[in-house]
Image 1 (spheres, rainbow, N blue to C red):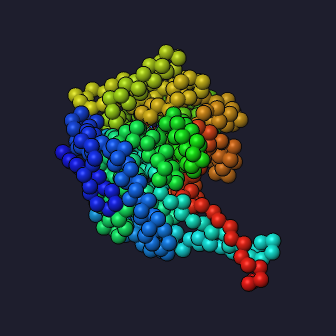
Image 2 (spheres, helix red, strand yellow):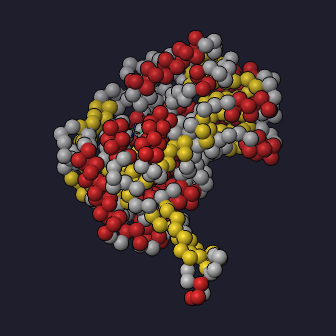
Length: 479
Ligand code: NAD
């Protein structure tokens, strides 16, 4: 059991102001895996003050960006030696199968660090022609960024916010999720060893009240949030009252469009990964499988066979493909949604209940056929191992169904005609979509349409979300 009894504030491990603790429960053993302090408002005040001081009174924000890039590159290299440790730590907190976790939970964040480390020559000031003479367009760091993250891919979420904020020259107060606060301690160790100055990264584990307090804190200049759409709306409203810039990465219910000419035997294994990765607890999961009526039975049969063969078990066993869900409340929520699907008339072809495990918050990986897109299982984000196969009559119908969602985060198109696939992708109202594979491109913007979010992370755009823009009309006589 891991006991963290202090908080990383101002580059040091300091005693929390209160005595509350958060117990991290291992979703497989249902036992306490670790504890961290439950941050109080006073701890948030101290963390924001440290971030403020570092931003306002040190040379951090004015250092050459190449120096900041070197810190990220060193942090990435340090992850190499701790890959398995981090993957296991995350699996222990939230049940991610460790085999997937090494890639999704550790290598992916490392790749994000590498991408931002590659922006060491980013030009923060460029010259344009103005009305009377040259104009300097400057990008300046916003200041103190409040970063609030969910539990499903915690290191990924920490890094997707902290790395671009560092490159921008901001300082950060990171509120880790109460389910997964332990890996943020490792991240701080790594950054400190990589040479990140004290006070650039400050971490306050806590629940939603601590998060809400941080969002409106007077010392914060920018808010970046990843989590549920419901919480995102509250945060946007609070930030709106203050006209505080906010980036929101929210939920998803993404469609995989399987065209008539697609080879089902190659598509289905990829959709198993893209739909059920991380036990289905992925915002980008391809959970609405759209199949043409002529291929419908073939798709349902192939998915059913593949899903029913998945290995369920201990997430720390590398052979496991589906682990437990993060919490008993999440397990119950998913089972409720499965019941709603049954009551709405959808047909379960595999799964639908709880597997025969003597412990752990498991839900059977489940496939629903005969799903109408208006059913709750097709409209709501389930965040569990549940796929819905929805028939379409023609391509226009497929695009209509894909777009008939409150969300617009991810998506895929599967076809023998790559160009035509890209044409279909252009018509789907979503922030990211891939043809004949599933991927997130870390050098390109990522984010959501509609209720999936506001603003973009990743790519240079993800860093620019932490930058203000200033125009200086230079002395025309000097030019
Ligand atoms: P959640 O919204 O319950 O919590 C997310 C984080 O916000 C936690 O740290 C929580 O303590 C905090 N929080 C909750 N309410 C808050 C409030 N009012 N003010 C400030 N902070 C608050 O979400 P979750 O259950 O932890 O995560 C799952 C959700 O995250 C899913 O909807 C998933 O799709 C989404 N997600 C989105 C992305 C993306 O990039 N779009 C990535 C991962 C997860």
